[in-house]
Length: 508
Image (cartoon, rainbow, N blue to C red; front, side):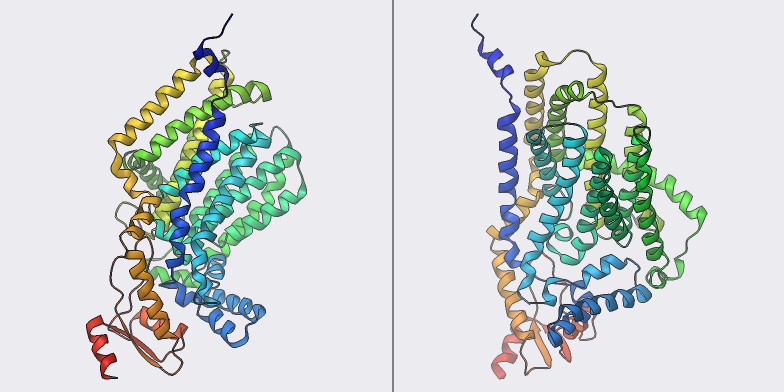
């Protein structure tokens, strides 16, 4: 009997073209980011944290001396400003330490680290553990990465500003790499995975507290889920203990009290109260995320359909089990809420903007991953309990999901203008990127003149986002003026309006 056209479409694996389409779209989406990399320049904290290492490099051109200076920077800030020892170590190695033209690698470097961390985690979760095919992993990985990169709230600190990305993007990738090592260990119990997890978790203890909490909470979840499978998972208590040690070293730094001021204190009561406050903030934050990122939610809807289609094949084939779905999903919500705890503990808030812009980025990333994890576990349990294969529903579910996603995009097109690609494209197309590059090249030329000790430069004008430039001011005693002057070994640095600067140059 001749098969109908509908039967042919149903039998054909529709995920194959979707996989390649998603991978191609992801690759193309990186072009605007990389196109803007040549304009990117150091700013703000890059100058202060990179001072000692830059001077060491200029004087000796010795990597050993630079690393010594990096450790000296860690010691300096540990006692005077903050205890996040590994973040400070990374800060001190910002690219312009070695070359004034090297900062262009930052967007490529941070995007690459982020993609590597997310992909390493998802691969080890899906392929060896859940027996998903590599092709299906590529499909899910491409879509998740598109959501995480394109709809991150603040592209500046996620991709383009080294100091911000080193403190938030890199630790987020580290946390996922450590969790990937845990998942690898569950599969074949190789001790080298314990060693690698220990390295990543130790370093994580010296970074921001959100990423550190993410690593600890996911490690605990994996330990509980897989303890009955094999008691050897208890070996992963070693990296957990090492991270906690690193966190204690960070939290007990004298510099934290200096930065926190007179109100800085650590009490058990305050910790417990902040837990309840975090749950409330997490619930509000989740609701706001659904409202503020409709395009991302449309992509999550499509991802849910992909997951359902993949799991309806993988669950029976691999004999997978998903016990206690309600508790696991509730725990994942708790992981998301935990991201609010550090900032609430020190009196900050996402809603009023009284925090570093790297915090909302991490919260958004964790929200998307916990949402993905909840869908994965919930749909896995549902597929396990459902005897029917769902083949007859396959095409209708795909059609309805894509129709709903396109409807959301059609209604909420403004959300797409906040995407990373559009922001980068608009900055380049309007000519602002070219103007910014011209001004920053001029600034560097003025600051590198060997025969001038008291430097006068014109104001940098125009919008910089998604790039960043902490402006040089009229006050030579200003923080940014002093730090840039020290970095370039100048006695003083001051900025004046361009027309005044032009007149002064004509007089000279």
